[in-house]
Length: 121
Figure: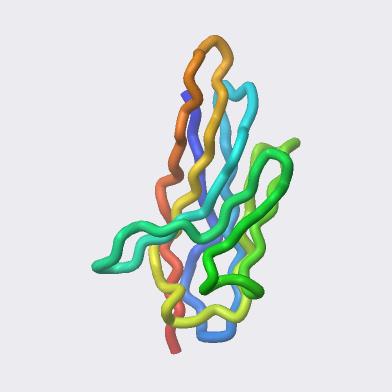
């Protein structure tokens, strides 16, 4: 079994910062691309940022210059540093990872449980 556990969400004021983390555990051979997604009330889930196994990154335009995605492969952990937070960043944030499990041919697309980020004054 593979689990992705997120932490770091919470309530912050506009302009504040949060750092989300997502740690994968279980029987893992390799973790390939990983992304952070978010879903605000009444909206579809959208990609926020992603990082490849080679550490190339891309971001949705609304967070460029404010958010930074990174990873620590030794810890099977991916981070999302969020600075200059805005009310429109309020959403449930989910991490996603493409994971190779030993002995299984297909990659697993794993999802974290989601963590609430609320930006409000």
